[in-house]
Amino acid sequence: MFVYTMKASGLKFFAVVAVSVAILATVIGVLPSITAAADVANVSTDYKNMKSEADMVNFLSLLGYEAEPKAAQVYEMEIPREFNSVYEKYNELQRAQGLNLKRYMGKTATVYVFKLKNYDYDGEVFATLFIRNNRIIAGDICSNDGNGFIHGFEQK
Image (cartoon, rainbow, N blue to C red; front, side, top):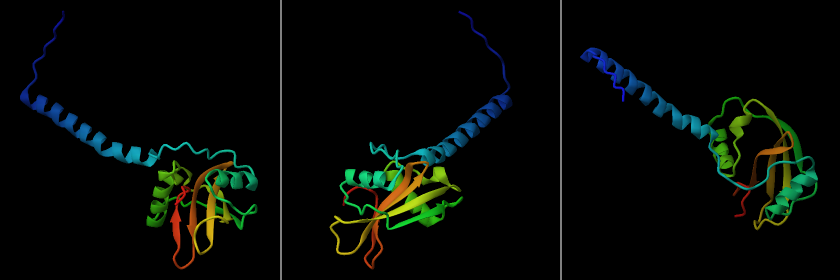
C-alpha cells in the first residue's frame, strides 16, 4: 500500500475548499435550468410521418376525434426566437404531451387547423397541428368562442 501525504498551510486549504464549494454551488444552480429546457412528458404518441392532411386526420382519429377531411386553415408561422409569457404557458401544455416548442425557436412551421365534428361542446372546436419536416412539433384542441378553452390532444 502506498500513502502520499503533503503539508498544506491553513490558507491554501481554505482556498481550495472555498473554490470547490463555489464550483459545486454553480453546478447545482445551473443543472435545473438545463434539464427544464429538455424535460418533456414521456408519452407513447407517434408524432411522425405527417406527410398529408389525411395523415393528420388519421392521427386525430387515433386520439378519438372526428375531423373534417380538409383543413379549415393552413398557414406558415415563424416560432419566435424568444418566448413571452403566452408562449411559455403554451409550451408547458406542449411539454405535458411530450413535445417541446423551444427546440424550434426561430424556425418556421406549417400550421393546420381542422374543425372537429364529434367534440361534446355547444360551439365550434378545432384541432391545431404545428408541422415541421413531416412531424407534429406542437398542437392543441381549442374553441375560440366567448367561453373558449384550450387543452392538449387528450380527450376531456
